[in-house]
Image 1 (cartoon, rainbow, N blue to C red):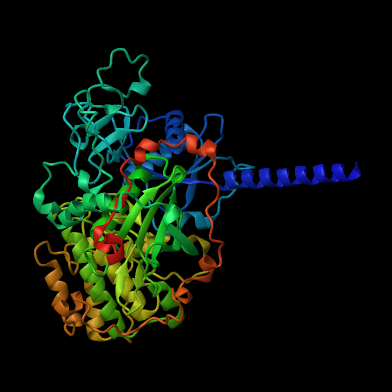
Image 2: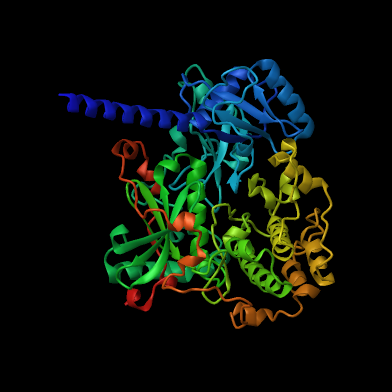
Length: 597
């Protein structure tokens, strides 16, 4: 009897520990929301209600709102007076919108931090701030639709590359971007009755052919009236897909792969080293939990990354996509395995690189970026971590989650996103921007390679100067000092890429940008045609002692157990599986000879 009591006591204690840990995880969670086009008439109560909807926070859950003032300090908004003051300062600076940090908790005492709040949460890696647009009482968010949809205003079909339209996060109304300010009626959610509205529910099209659904997940689903010139480069991929399905009969699934080792992890995904059982070929597998892709913006991120991976297969300096498949709980992207490690891994061991090495890597990166730009894609996340080396020492860029598609020469976008240390000044100023931000990031990366440090290093014990906002101030205002140890040519190319004016920046002239880079004196020794064919010998060959080269990956990942947590049926029931229709894909350009037979 005593043994039974002890067992029950131990079980209860374990349950209490688990509940406490979950509670702590919940309390320490916080979200970042960037709101633009705010109306000064917005009340504090209305703001709280909209934030709860945006962040999926229950009404009974207490929340704390904090925003960053122009001095870089987090300020609590807990009353109408504090909101008015935030509006006053926001209207004066107008940098990039009102950035709110939302905590699902309240401080223990006034003036104290919220549970889980830390200075470090205001400074993170690459991320995208959610951007919302207010019009006629609606709160719109840019969205790419994965099935036919019609505009709730003009009734015409919404289609195209990138975020084709807007969706109200409250009433789910779908409209063209050009129509969102023309709506005569307010948001249905704010109206007393919806009987007087004329909108089609959820923006659905009454004339849509349900027997022929279209999806924007697959490259083969681009509307027939799309510009053929922009799609001709992927026609080979599209044309080959049906043949592969007919010859193979079945699509790939998780059972076709052997999971070998964890090699990376991010906020959304885990990356595994896997082996295709049929061919013994090694690949990297990016695993994304569907429960984390819970809103339109997250779904757009996965769609964009998949589309860019598809096109990247045609360039030797970009990681390409092998295949995609899904289960009820996860999305799987099988991509090229690059076993030489990333530049961050090698820089941590060498501190800085000789100029010849940096020149070689920068030139291959330039070819990769120019390829993306010609495809209408802004990369937006160039950094040491995303530059991989293959077994020969050639560069391959990876991680396309921050990419922006559908940008033609002269076009711009305005999303505030990126890794803080690499964000270009025009993004921080809240200006519209184009491909210029990638050339700025390349300048930062080249500075890091040749100087062994960031051009914006902040070495101080002052906590007020160790914030994201102070870093942004340094990027915007402080002149960049080039180390005297660098050559005149190296100093010249860094000054060219790190020009704070995008109109004067190297590589940013619409017609001659890439030509200007290739003809710069720093790159004069590069044979660009040979380099693009990978006929130039890399200056460094990574050490690969075993079959997979795992010594080039951080042990904090490779020591993790290789397993996928069991599915939670309650979580799966809450997932809208229709959002992921058409995700499956096989790329004939990356299939081995054995697979394609």
